[in-house]
Length: 283
Image 1 (cartoon, rainbow, N blue to C red):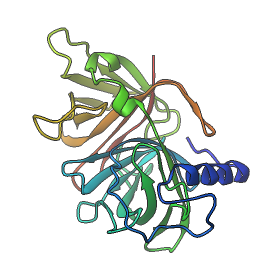
Image 2 (cartoon, rainbow, N blue to C red):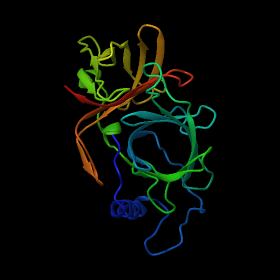
Image 3 (cartoon, rainbow, N blue to C red):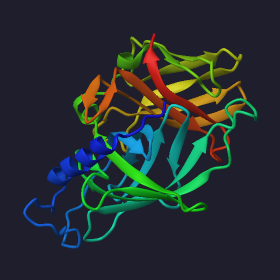
Image 4 (cartoon, rainbow, N blue to C red):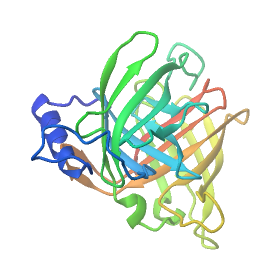
C-alpha cells in the first residue's frame, strides 16, 4: 500500500511537529537544537511515511541508548542494521541510524528479497509524540543512489496504553498481495486459555506456502513493563527460519492517516534474504 503525502498535509505535519518538539519555539525562528537536550525515548509504535511509502514502525530498546527499528509496509520492510542502530546525538534532538530496505524479489523464490538497499536516517524526535516532524525535518538518504526523502512519523498510543494480551490478536488475519499481486496470506493466531503471554501462529497462502511458529509478548528483561509488542518466530515451509516483531493498532484517524484495527507483522531471516509480513486485516 503506497500513499502519497499531499504537499499541504506535509507542511501541516511539519508545523504541528514544531509545537511538540522540546526546545523549539514559535517565537524564535532559530531552532535550539544545539542547546543541552534531554534524552528522548523513541521506543514504541509509529505511523507515518518514508518518502511516499506509508509504514508502521516498531522500535525497541534494551538500554534506552540504542534502538532497533522495523518499519513495515504493504510490500516490504525497512530493518535496522545491527552495527548502526538509532542513537541520539549528544546535546541534540537528533537521532541517526541505518536501515536496510528489504522488498520482495517477485521473480525469485517465494518470499525472497532483493539485495538490501542501505538508508541513512537523520531525524529529530520527541518521546511518545513525533519523530521527523519539526525543524529540522526528518530525512533519509540512500547510500548508493543519493536519493533523499522525508522521514515523518507520529506516535501511536496503543503501544503504552493497551496492555499486551495474545488473545487480543487471536483469530485469522489476512494480508492481501503477499509476495505477489493477487496472492493472499492468512495468518491464524490461536487463542490461549492457559496464558496471555504467548501462543502459536500458523499461516498459508494461495501459492501453497506454509508458516508455523510462535508469537509472544516482548520483554526487554524480566522486570520490565510489557508494552504492546510481540516477538515472532516462524518457519517458512518447514525449512526457513524467520524472526521479527508484531503489534496492532486500534482504529486511527489523525494527521491524514486513516486505518482500521490492523495487525502489523514483520519477520526475516538473519541475512535478510527472506521476509514475510505486512499490514493485516482481521477476517
